[in-house]
Length: 138
Image (cartoon, rainbow, N blue to C red; front, side, top):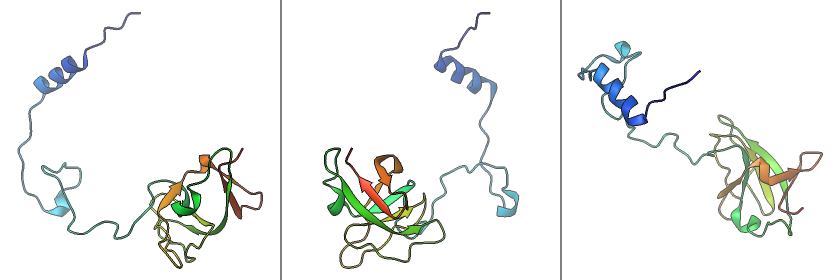
C-alpha cells in the first residue's frame, strides 16, 4: 500500500481553496458559545494576580540550591505544599522547599525573598518519609 503524502504548503493551499474566511460580527456573550473570536481577547488585569508555577515540582530559593550538582548534594526540608486554589501557608526559610503543583501560587519567604526557582521532580530525590528533598548528588 502506497501513500501519497502532500507537501505542507500544498495541503494548506487545498484547505484555503476549499474554504472562505468568515466575516466578523458582534454577538451577545450568551450567543458566543461555539464561536471563534475575530480578534485577540485580553484582560485588563494580570490573571492570575500572583506569581504561579508553570510546572509541578518543588519551589525553592535559588541562592540555596545553586551549588547542587551531581557531585555535591543539597538537602532541603519540605515544609509545605502549594496547590492551585490552596496556597502554601508556611513561608520558605533557609534550606527549605515547598512541594508545588502547576498553577499554584509561589510561596513567600520569611526574612528575604520567597521562592524564585522551581525544580522538577525528575531532578530531585525525596526521603522515604517525603519530608526531605535532595538536589544533586549521586
